[in-house]
Image (cartoon, rainbow, N blue to C red; front, top):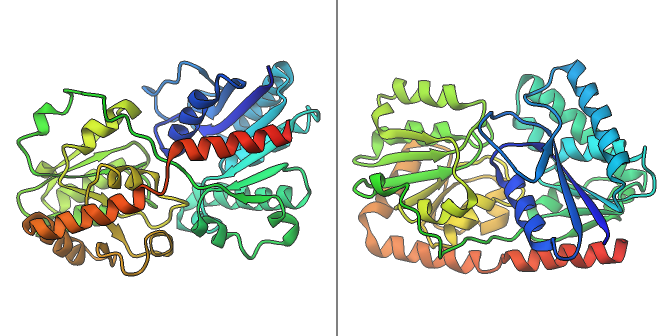
Length: 363
């Protein structure tokens, strides 16, 4: 049986890890698959089948240690194919794979080409280096395939050199929620009017815009599912806006629990400034739930400029549309219908089968 090594940057909840895990489960019958995470940022996050090379966010010196650990892992596992999921893992994984030249290489572009510009400090530096390395590696014919996950994502790479683009292939992301799963973990929420988000607590995800809008949205509780560096800032802003009694952060739920959680919500809030696809909002739309999105290049490309609940990144405007959804049943139903029609286009089995077809061509 042919062997695949999946390389991811972070062992923590998020769309990339979720998508890789679903693909891993889907393709086990066809291939022997091993997953390696470069490091783990959240102590309580586990992946029983994955190997984590470092237990926390690394210093510069530890980054080199991780790199050499990855080389050792690749040489010991002897994969026929390496699949990397995102900028950092693309750079680390492909460079490390050069020490085992027999393998083939597929990279996934899980972020837009410009997303690093939203980051700050060391994260921006790391993101910039990742983008530069990915661009250089992609121009050298080392990638056997470069998977782009949405039309907007492809558009963001459109000005890259032809030598990079010739290995790019558009394969849409897919969504898959287990509707049969029942979960009582959210019973305590059922008597509240809830709005909610799922996403990493980062600047790009822009949760603070929703926090600022809460003082104009009455009688609702805002639930955020996610972990990340912006947690303290979100909590501080909640206190500043005097809405901290109406904000709850749930750090982690399993993919099997997502459907149950989404069913407790009246509105899904997705204020992200940059996305390659928007996996979380697509899952919410598949329920279907009415969703609030921020006006940004990615949301316009994915949903169209006329999608009724794309709003400017302004707390009062976010609140106005949210209140309209909560108070106008017909408007909410129209949004659900529009959301469902979009979500139906993106089926996970189509995505996985497309990946498997490309893998067969390569190995």
